[in-house]
Image (tube, rainbow, N blue to C red; front, side, top):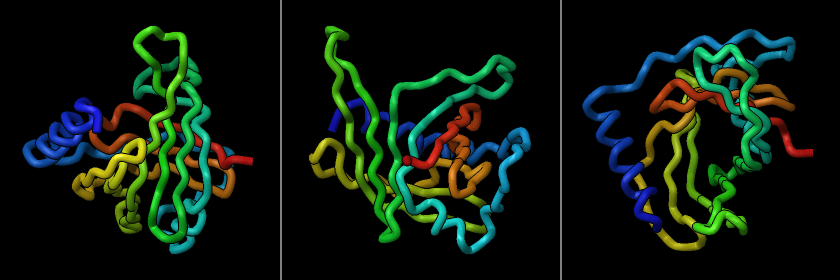
Amino acid sequence: MPKYMLLLTILSTLALTFHGPTAPVPFPASAHKILLPQQPDTAQLLAQTWVLREQQRLGESAPGITPDKMQLTFRPDSTYRLIKPGRTNNGLSELQVVEEGRWTLDTARGLISMQTTSVDGRAMLSTMMPRWQIEEVSAMQLVLQQFISGKVFLLFEAQK
């Protein structure tokens, strides 16, 4: 496991322990049909592959940045796979970081908790903890707010 991921897990756990979660920030309403996280079929809607299309920081009025391709797959058996692009030190070639684990949905609070069980095929075990707050979910679009910082929104679209 890369050292930075272990450090991130430890720091995230400490931040939640001593400071508690931040309050969710309202996200602008959309023209899409929004299913509230309390609805029972939210878990069914999540169970597909999502591709990151846009990332935006809270308080920025400019359009969000188009990030590198990232895929997030929630499976009906409560497992997930997150594929993130990575870069080598020379910046010329690209790597992929593949994270896998278990996920749960707290429908009352709209929180997705995750427990990482492997990174790039190497076994590891992290604590099951909240990672994202669901802001919007429909059959074609998913908007997540990072739970720890609360300042970054991720707009995903269903993979076609």
